[in-house]
Image 1 (tube, rainbow, N blue to C red):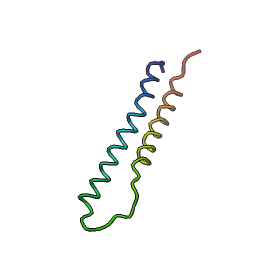
Image 2 (cartoon, helix red, strand yellow):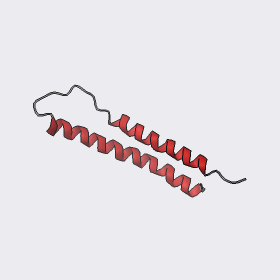
Image 3 (cartoon, rainbow, N blue to C red):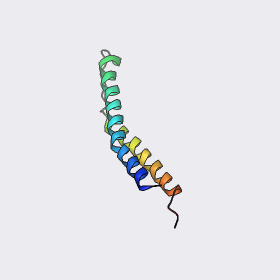
Image 4 (cartoon, rainbow, N blue to C red):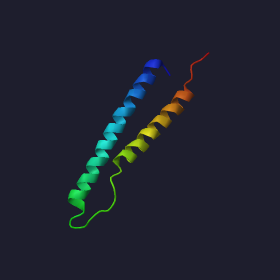
Length: 73
């Protein structure tokens, strides 16, 4: 894997975290506004956790790809 490709893949990680946090946060707020009606939801927002797991999976795949395409000595 070239250095340029490695930088591009690593620059995508924060964008992926921000986008996945935003989507899960919007889903949570829409669920509370529209889906629950008169019922109360006692759970806490876990948008940061979902975004962290997705970003962690992305970085794990990046490490596997980086290991598969090692530079030739």
